[in-house]
Amino acid sequence: MCGIVGFTGNVPADKILIDGLKKLEYRGYDSAGVALAYPGRLDVIRRTGKVAVLEEALSNDEHASCCGIGHTRWATHGRPSETNAHPHIDCHGNIAIVHNGIIENFVALRDELIAEGHTFRSQTDTEVVAHLLERYYEGDLVAAMRKATQQLQGAYGIAAVCVDAPDQIVVTRKDSPIVIGMSDGDVKGSFIGSDMIALLEYTRDAIFLDDGQIALLRPNSIEVFDRSGKTVEPTWTHVDWDAENAEHAGYPDFMLKEIYEQPRAVRDTIAGCVKNGEVILDELTLDDEDIAAIDSVYIIGCGTSYHAGLVARELIEGWARIPTTVDVASEFRYRNPIVTPSTLVIAISQSGETADTLAAVRLARSKGAKVFAVTNVVGSRITRESDGAFYVKANMEISVAATKSFLAQIACLSLIAMFLAQKKHRLTSNQVASLYSDLCETPSQIEAILENQNEIEEAAELISKAHSAMYVGRGIGATICKEGALKLKEISYLHAEAYAAGELKHGPIALLDENVPVVAVVTDSPTRMQTLSNVQEALARGSHIVAVATEGDTEVSEIADYVLYIPRTRDWCSAITASVPLQLLARHVALKRGCDVDHPRNLAKSVTVE
Ligand code: M6R
Image 1 (cartoon, helix red, strand yellow):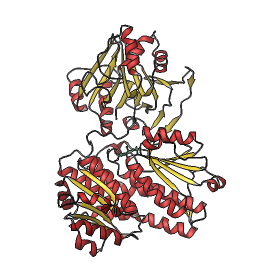
Image 2: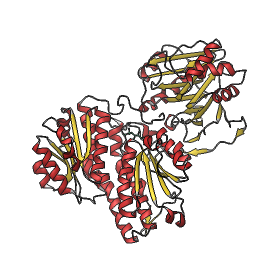
Image 3: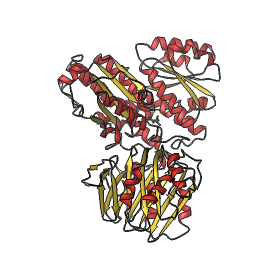
Image 4: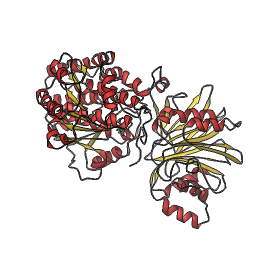
């Protein structure tokens, strides 16, 4: 969603802000802008469209200011336009602000401020913040920010600059991430970003601001204050990501690059987690008594992370025999879920910032449950509000379509399932060692799939011409289908449905004809024969078949138009391997349909609003 950057230091800020905004482009946006601060003056430049358009506009003039803030906006209130783009300013152009999130009570505040004589220029919820700062500003922007935020309801990350202190940035947050860092390399100064990626070129040590904290950034210092205005000692976190990860590295798009990084992501995630048949998960800070008391597991997540949860349910119930419920976080948070202190809750979120998942975590904890996060982002909100966190080692994921994080999540969740099963005395050390050894095979199996992609292009050609595609499978295969169909929808804008294959005849089979291809996951599994029968039913309705099957499966190749093979593996490991051809398939279809795979329309990488 929206992105925030800021810099105050020893060199002109414009280029640094533009570079930072480019790094945040992956999050999705429709307009961009910057405010550059000078003594007695602010230059605010905003454009609709890409950051490159803003860059072009900035290049028309010299910009000497070494302090500024920048923003990429993803429209919520008010259509994408230059007037609605951030930064927004107060009545006199003395204060400029950028904002991520949504101010829920903006209508009441705007009416109040208009009644006081303030003039509004945009249709945004954000502009009230600029006018509130104006209302409270008496020479101290930090104090004004404290008073202004006391009036706000909703979620926000806010950065502000003011003409009276043109080398300072004041920043705060609530339910929307803000990261702060410093660099003393050639570029010396203080930085802000709504995402660590904006800072990585300059530093890997960062302060993840807490809700309610306000920070004052100067070129040589950062001060953090709590809600009452008391100075607090900030916590610095080291982030183990490479700046190079944010580069294409020769790949045509980030999605393909990240698909190719999957073997490493899985390897890094599982390395050293089982020794002599013992699962070692220090992050799961539960003692034997706590684990003995667990009588149910609840898994929450959204989108792809939810799909990883569905796989985890199969494994936890199958191995540990603990009843497991999986729910999308946006539903969980508004129900009255049966969660008690003896429920183990697992919150899955690549970004660790998804608003619905965060709300679900808070609800689960309020019911006394222990919540553990499975996430890719160190220091993210969900990790800090959970009782513990497992970090998948996918490294920074840029493509909106999640790929490597999904595989790493499944790998991590399979270790959690083994751990619980072992602690509940459902699996012996030998069985754990054997499962782990199967898991350790998956990275090289993914490599084999990536090396041999025959028929994917042809299958993609078939699907790209259809108006809808039906994905079917059973068990783990049914979940893989859900994820495959989501990938196709997200990046190729082609309608797809995913069904448990046995459900076809209960309704969706009515959709099938020669224009609706069926993508069937028919890998080696206890239900392979039943799935094959369902494929026959689809064939009988004229559907073309694209199958994901195990190498050497001639029965499938006889009936399918195209077969995407995966190496022979245990059924549960196919959750990892069988996902790969479906990711590649979705990407090929998207490219054939002329879509920008890394920037799918209407989508954002991290969904920090409800
Ligand atoms: O960061 P999270 O894992 O919490 O994000 C959840 C979903 O928004 C995300 O998985 C989304 O569905 C992806 N775009 C899927 O590719």
